[in-house]
Image (cartoon, rainbow, N blue to C red; front, side, top):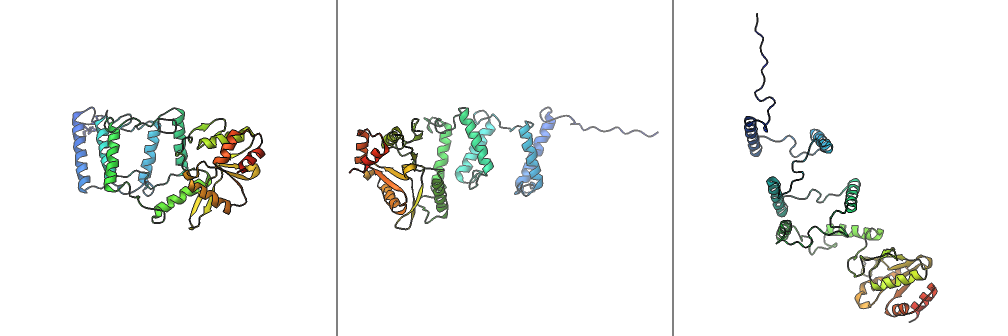
Length: 331
């Protein structure tokens, strides 16, 4: 009668590195050996130098991991940890800061353009943070580093080191002295900004005036100066419908260059552009634009409110727009 062979069971079945010292010792030894082989080039990772777009196994792995993170089956090893509470996080943070400062490591989004979908997701996240009152340094919120210095806060000190190293190595300030005429990147940036201004997506010099960033509820918009504030209030009091900084014009200068002119006010009913300027010496550039505009965009009616008309307007009690115009035209 033949003997029945017993099925052998591995000595480490059911054991893990967390529950058995022998398994842990073997695991550590294997990891160290594998690490040395990778370092020497004896072993090469199957996905090295490849992306998920060109290597299917990597794409599948990425999808699987993503779904596991979403479901909560996988949790990031450093989730909830900080460099103050975890030595590994502190060491990795220090290493990454050094790599960013030396230029060995670059931000993932450097020179990359966000897709419309990704931009929308970020906008939603930011808006949600605003609604929840989170402190993210936006308008109306206090910046995280307000009042902190490199002497009092380690994070500010780290960031200061990065900036200093960046200047010393030339990684920061590399564009200094470059213009759109001499540098292709500067020209692209200039053209992009010009299109944003013309489309109304962006308005320049929004931080240069005392009254900017002060929303006037009774007007329904911001103003740049006290003069603009008073003129807008006066127009509203006489029932005049106006638009504030909505018109944008691209003008051609004598030297062949182009510039963008944004008038202060536009009265649709009169097809009238109003430019409010106090002391001419403080805003010669915009007055030059106004003169060029008058010559090139002659289909619009124009009105310049400088010191004399302004003083008359605020002292008088005009009741109609015709009276307003008459006072402005009197010199």
